[in-house]
Length: 442
Image 1: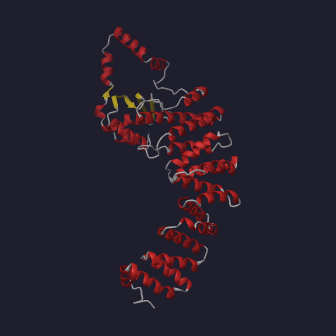
Image 2 (image 1 turned 90 degrees about the horizontal axis):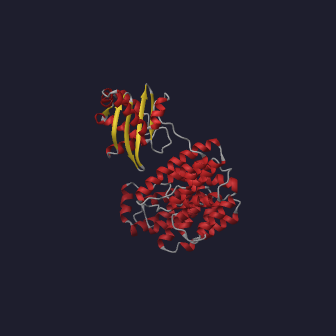
Image 3 (image 1 turned 180 degrees about the vertical axis):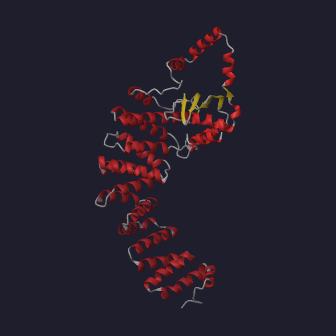
């Protein structure tokens, strides 16, 4: 038994085994049989009941399931074998059936075989031809594949069931399209583009915060296929839907990078101007935060330094709201364009018209001054912020900077006054740490 378990574990992915465990625990596996190295059962899935058969001969395994899954081994087969590992006593021995067959008369046996042929004609035909009873998957014709993709869409009442059914159909159609793409046919590319549009329409109809909605992974699979074939034509409406998805849905760092790779390669084929113009339509209006952040980061990434006009258009839009400005500043800093970031921030001074806004303005500007080697200006701004909000980390940061500029003795009295007035506890804490703080202003 342990040897069998060891072999079984490697047949399926950890994700498939996790689903298999849930299927078995929830009672979705029934009518289970085992005998002569063959496991059989019925597994209930989102589209109905699936008949599953797993056969072992030596070290070779073969799985057959009536589901739509195109991979050699599906989660329904995993669920059947999980049940065998956990509760083998719930599997009816096939010997119980064969022993009854041996007791049949010749007439009853012929009648029995006739009934089996009527119920399972394909199986009987296969066995009579010398096969082992396994089911060969039928390859879908390209016209048939295109029809299936075109007809893909939500058509059930329950939203939860709707999504489950739709996802299962989509996964299997994607696998079929991938098989055809290997052949390099135009119809396969057409099917991929259409399937992408179907997925995007489905995703964009959902709320990003809706429980259980994890659609970014599906779109990432499509992006990989599209990115490798961008020499082919992608309709503009599909590109715009991909852009809308990128702006609307939460993405992991890895998923966002896949979009960036796609957009960069798309620009190499269609030009940066093409995608930037499409982006402009997204920030001409008042897009919601954080969608605006994605717009800014992508637009900034697409603009090389020489395209001043387009950058000024983007900067002009960002200068209307500091929530837009800050991600653009982050992007410029990532690109080490500190001078451009400083000039942009200085131009945006009117946006920071509150006390907290001015504090943030001085904080960001001081960082840029330091990156440009302008330490005296950074020190001055830091002192202004410390006067408002004296803190321990800020104290030591100012001390290091002042020692660099040779102005530590000059600024100490001002720091002392600020701590005495607004944070006397910090003054005592620094004294205990061995800092030589003045006993009074000098």
